[in-house]
Image (cartoon, rainbow, N blue to C red; front, side):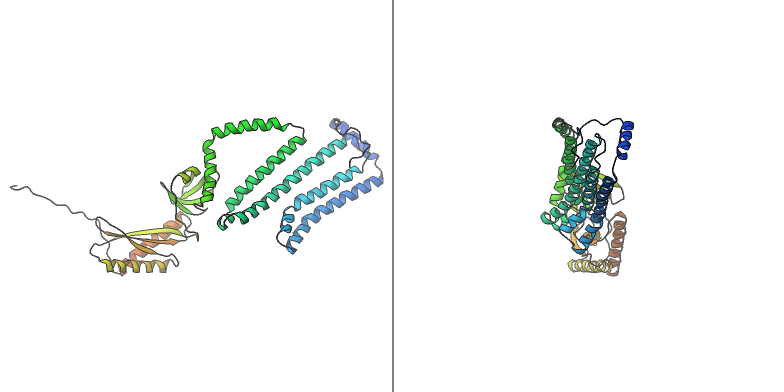
Length: 369
């Protein structure tokens, strides 16, 4: 507690030079007993700070999970609170300090404790985000680092807003007018940035529908590439040719998106061939079997499939699909080239010939010419 003989706690402090002089003069009047008691209390605070820093780690290693994880996350706020409190109580013993010192000390202590509380709230929010993900989200979303990042930012933003209101209130600033002005400003910004708000809502729609994950290959409209980053406003897409594209989330919500990567991380490849029309059904089935066996040998676990695609102008078209582990444009070109060469080699070994584009032109000669 602040000594009772201290006069008006909110007395205005003197100029810095006068304050320093009065503080030095007050220190000269301190007794040895006061200094010893004050130093002992502050030393206990330092010991408590180190104990919280290292003791919480020992507790977590000894008893992992649950409460000890929370205490370990709060080791800095707890240690700081112990030290600041002991420092405040240690200074209370020094009753001969000047009158202007006590309101300054009280205000500083209150501000430091607010900072400690904010730090503890932020760290607690991080833990609550992790618990919420594991309890209420699917396994896929619970392990998504970007979902954790966005949720953590939202929780931290709420905590920091509340902390700012408390700090301003303690500084004597009337926050009601500020909140009213912020409300009008927020409404104006919402009208001016409706596209941005639509993109933010689109981000949560993408999460809810689980359209794709970071690293997946997707295709929609004229875009085809790998998702490198998902943001509140847009995604970063690496095209197959290597360019980095920034695409607003609203486009991903408003247009059909083809996800070409499986949950196991394997992405789709396709190879189309045109065989001669003289080949009958059995020959085509044999061709599909031979090519799929060759692809499976080259890419184990790729699950190759072959199917009849269409009757082309000059060939019977067959499409082979498989999944490989390519994760960027260079790997895509490598696997695509390898797959085409494997198909060509398998067809050559089976004696299958590709149909060349042909066109039949009939010429009619007028009679009597």
